[in-house]
Amino acid sequence: MTVDLYILAAGSALTGLVFYFFAGAEWSLWHLFTIPLYTFVFIVFLSLSIIKRFKSSSKPSESLTKIIPQEKNGITIVFGSVKGNCRTFAQSTYDKLSNELNCQVILQDLNDITDPEEFLQIQAKNQRKLLIFISTYEDGTPPPSATWFVRHLQEAATDFRVSKNELEKLTYAIFGCGNSFYDDNFNKVATELDRCLSELGAKQFIPTELADENSGKSIYGGLEGHYSKWSSQLKSAFQSPKTEKCDCSNENSISCCQSSTNNDHSIEKKQNGEQSRIESDDDDEGGGCKDGDDDIMDLEDMGDYMETHSPNKTAKGPPKEMITPIIRKSLEKQGYKLIGSHSGVKLCRWTKSMLRGRGGCYKHTFYGIESHRCMETTPSLACANKCVFCWRHHTNPVGTSWQWKTDDAQTVCQGAIENHYKMINT
Image (cartoon, rainbow, N blue to C red; front, side, top):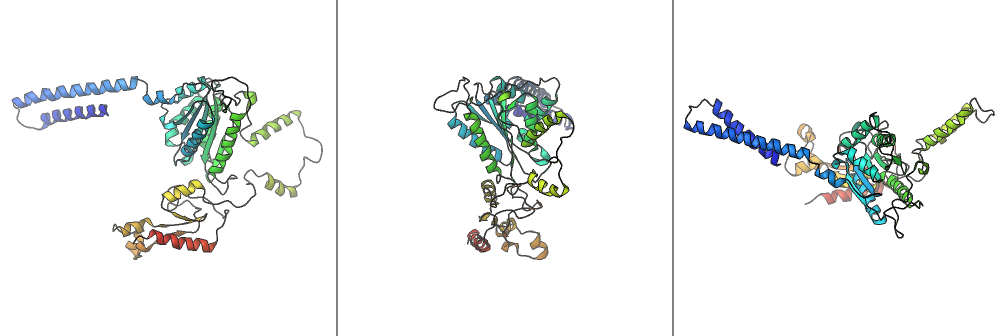
């Protein structure tokens, strides 16, 4: 801020010089006195600005010294979030681990990491566990707050000058937030971070979780279900038996160093598909085809096989509710009065404008429709096309077919009338 004021003062002095030179006024003793004065002021403030900028760039960043932990065998939790889901899960994990573990637990926004290389090196040097909560933004890109961190890892993983054992002492776990509606870019950032960290020698201590916000397709019913399952795995990993001595050992608490960090002690592969690929590679070493009719499948049996082995097939069970706790919180923030598990009402934004005397919408202007009487009722909050009306906040559920629990029609109708009356203030 001080540097900007110096630049502003120097600019003002320069403006004064230009004015005197090009104003075309007659010269006097006053001009002969003020021109050197303005010149001197300009030079002084410009010099101070340069000195300040040089000093600020030469000293280490204040935020960097705060975010790099020094204690060994601790846990660092970082997050990159757009809508706040990853921030919420990271905060919840921080609260749980801080209470359950007798070691240093640090929570950090990826936006505050000014030097990712130094940050990761210190994490590896101190043999810390790194928990990453990351979402996937538009077109498979990372959140703006995590762009620099992700870009550094991508460049380091492909740079031949960087050792492939750069982060061999670092163990990590990733929780990715995405939406399966975007098939090609579903949790692309979390997958990319997993790949880059693995190529740099870091080791997983629990599998990467690719959480699905689409409650209709997710086998866990949305982000909360995925987080509950992942946090249980995390707790089990910290409780796994190990006799290794560490600074945070305590008889009455869970030691953060009890989980294994060696290659031969990795919990499991990232995906079941990866395990099957490894097994099939071993089987193929024998060469040739196996004898027997069991390896040959009739064409008539292909349909049943594909149905039972489809990777997108969700577990059977009762229909899930469309409105998850995260979606409920977001919709209520937008002004929706929710009814049951899939409906809601609200005042049209143009209705509010009309009632406040600020004019109505195009329907009133062109067609004479009284938009101040417009009351929105949405029996299904799910969006199929993601148009700009209900999807401008990117929070509505997504689905092209009905796959949720269905509320009674009378309950929805009565709830809509009651909530509309409540929104009318007389």
